[in-house]
Image (cartoon, rainbow, N blue to C red; front, side):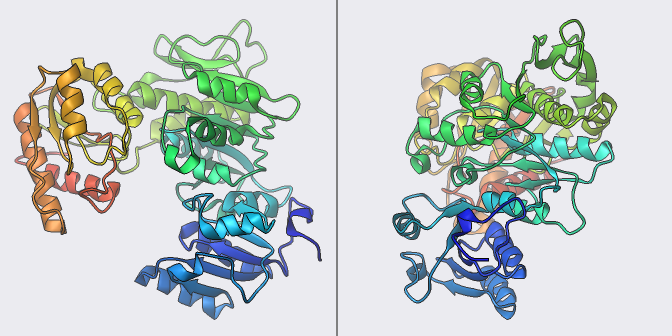
Length: 497
């Protein structure tokens, strides 16, 4: 088969003979190289880094005929010694990255791994049920995975969590449905999704430097609705998500389905008298509603029951499942069985009536706000690299819940200034950064933070790590920050899980 790859028929795209450049050799890059090489593509991988882990992955693929070039010099321009038909880029590479800019100028298609997966998947492949949003994506898709599996389907959470989409889409055993988490980065490079149903949970400022502004960031999120067949799910309290549905180019018959924490209107899912109810996916929706579960089914997902953001995530998962024809009993059973993953509002321990919750993934104010609104009395462990985010609105929203604040971070001024303006009566403990150049120093930092938080808390309070900031100024990544918090809590006197 010859001709430009973009003109080749799909679904079931044949990549044999296609000269593919894989830009970035992370998990998705490895999966792209592996899956396309197996199907006869001529694959070159480039990455600016050369760690032992990357080198090990390269050694495996090079034995199978994939060429891997590591080092920054290979990422600055297209290769001079070979023709390229298609670039498949890592989601982390910005559009102005020199190699990608050169490919665009040369008219070479640039696809995400997700775009390639959609084209390569067979026409009778698994249904795509996709989720994006600034916060809550992982919780929603893993809840959806649990629901689908309790309905007896072979289903998996994939994309920005779990398996790369291309591995799930081309799995030789064949999945029935994919619960796909998609970031704005992945969506930027994706033109064709054609999901059965998709959800945008929320849109708040994030990654604006990458996208070039708030409008472009929102537009990238909205790509998830393109080609939807059954339902576009949105948050009724987030005007941007509604606008993205209104602007979407969907298939005839696709409907907008709203989510609310109150009683649902027509074509909405919501909450009535402690019950999760559906007025969207039943024939008599004008006059009745279907019970999908109760708030009690989610009570294990928070120190004082599920927070509002967790309830909305559950409603989103339920809406996507209902769009796929899943019955209410499987939704109830899937939510009852669901457990939070590590670092996502994870209840670690309770000691002397004080609950310790790890939400280190709350790396921006919007995520932290959702976590902070899930409890009434909180000692908040916060701080880190704010990336210029505005903290005033967040602290104004939650000040009445704050018993005390413990500040991490190389520079605490953004937090101390906002706290002084909006919560001057709340006691603040600043943890001396000291030397965090090694694990021992970072461990000491977190132990000091937990000790300070414990001194501020009383029975019934929640000590919450929800930093509202990135971890890179003091920790290896957000996961290490959470792991060290968990270790410090566990070492605390008399802590019990």
